[in-house]
Length: 378
Ligand code: 1QQ
Image (cartoon, rainbow, N blue to C red; front, side, top):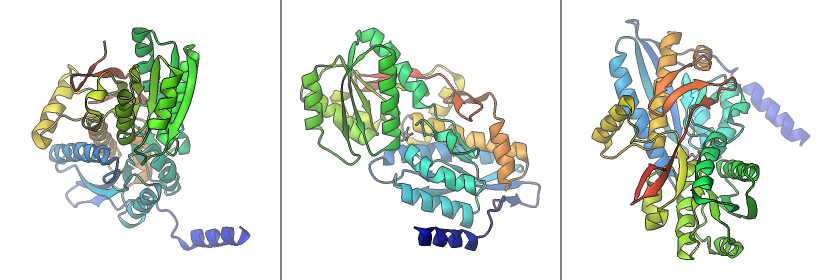
């Protein structure tokens, strides 16, 4: 290991010192040009998350470049991580060192952010998570931001209304043990249940990529809980919900942020009925901003935006607003400092300020699936 550390040290020394500059520039006419990188889960089992994010980002980008003509032009460079930490690290290194972006949006998964947040911090490059909801994201460093509402805020909101409405007294849990987001969400669910005085009747796990959940769910059914709590990404989460109903586990199911994608309705089908989740965004919100966004998104993509699209759209607006304030397209530290000062940003996924740890302050709505659609839970 001494040899390894030496090799690592030598490797570090060989690299150019982290520059503070992205390659953003003045276009000559006073217009700032800024390159922003996006790292998304664009292929594989979570591709619908990445697709929604990419669409939200691109819609915002078109609007912003039109509105800011002559002042700011943003170039978006998109990288697919496939939801994998190693690919996310490669993408971050490319964006930082080769493309010289001024800031990064993404990556999609909390686990990926735990992997690349330190890389971005080391290079003094601001990084804005638009869907990272695990605990500890902002502890990575002061270049790390997120506009995604943490599960520690969203889950208790969903549990509170679900427990009251259904008179839940006992609970069982199932989650993906090899996914940082799912593990973090489970911990929040378990701690919240304890606080609420629910009896814990069992905890089961699986791995991302699994397709058979019969053994775990059969055990849970035998324990006869009043409710099932699922912390998972949409693919595995939906299959869990489907199997639960198949084996006759017909108790209320409360999920986490991973369920906020229409793929849940596709994969779980009728079994998704009654599923309860908290989200910072609903396309049904009677708010002019939101309805405008929904309309434009539908016109462009032929479907309603989900939470991932909304937070991506807001994320691009946040970057642009901060870049305009810095008036220096390529200065990473200037962008970082402007992001840190963000207050009362009025986005489609809600009003946004960052707390002292750069976490968003926001209020979730609780939704449920009724007749094949997510609707407000009442
Ligand atoms: C996280 C999440 C996932 C559901 C993003 C797709 O919230 O990884 O934090």
